[in-house]
Length: 622
Image (cartoon, rainbow, N blue to C red; front, top):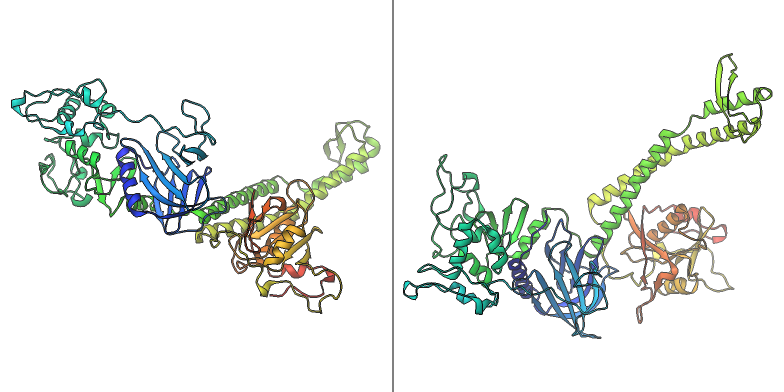
């Protein structure tokens, strides 16, 4: 279930992040619109913020390699801050090199959808937005200065001390906060010995209207309003609703007996069996003094919060980030960066494999029986003289004397109709021979992908495609002596089942030469994802994607010419060669591909031998 955010939770988290990530060095930032995620790759940690409406948690994990689509931002964290009474967190960075020097990441936790922005420069120009919003009073699109939401004007921001002041009987009571709050509305008149805050909460409680608190009191939210309005004597609670120390089960109560009186607020924390309530809770939410991170048990699921709240069972946690991690782990595996990218690609591949299985099953179920089609074609040939040209429906006498109803194509002659039936019978026979094998392979593919997902990530993370080429044991070799004449090519050539040339690089420098000097812009470029290996080029001139079989064979060669060759399933990236670029001053073999798709293949060590051309002069040895 999704975590709910309010201003105290945002401020407490910002305070904790500021302490945990003080002056941390940032490597890259990634906004994933499809998964609704923000990831900040620090050298010491990975901060992952899931802004999906079904999640919402923030987790701090060990450092991971930035994914290929992350924005490189070499910078140092200088500030983490959440404005008072706002659901907005700001992380401010100073670039280590380059301009503009100031970079800011803003997370807005208002309404739906939650949003994240990357700002640059002192003027806060929007560089990137998780959810662009071009319309409205506050557009959020790249290229314009960022406009934050209007600041909160609820009571308690400008004059918290006045709210907490207790009025003695000698003062006559009464308080008007028009000057302090600027809202033009006064608090109710306090009774002797009562503060304006206590008077306001009492008035809202007596009126039975929590909306008064939500509309007018700073730091109040739907999460904490019931605890703010709680006051002795508390209403009876059922025994199963009584929280015990630290959030455990409460004491056994006889049927019908009310909850024992709660300890007075003056007792030191933690008070046994209950969370905070009333004015004492508001003071804690306002100052965030002595936070007590915990996980509340709410009707909507587990909820991290900086303080236990009266009326909720809870479990204390060492920190808010630890509480977030506990909630996130209860929902499934935690994957960020390359791991999340690979898992998403693997899940997409599994969905496509399942769709193929369903399509093959439907095709097999609807395939015609070839025997009856051939029998009907033979009958037409035997009765050609009885069939008028242009006939559509007619009844013929069968070979056994029975009546046979026949539907023909009127635009064809009787002989052409018979030939069409023979062709249909041949196609049906071929389909019935071919489809079971294809269906078995498709089901096997689904099982492989499901097993890979069950095991976890099939690849190993790396920042970019590695600079080294194919391992020596997997490089193409010739048994005979090298050619004495002609250019020494930087690749080994293979021929796909469809007759298309596949070129496999021999090393880091040879990879560069193959990619940028021995291929055309429309050729297909392949490389095993997250593993050192060779660049592979599938020669292709046509529009769209190459034939699936040729592409799969090129991907298998890329997997075999990489360090992932012993894996059960290897993800192989592919794109048009024109979308592959060489970063400035990068080592040999390092490239940055764009518009990448991923193909998951199973390495077949026998494939290079089968695809080697007759004039190869040797074998592709292991």
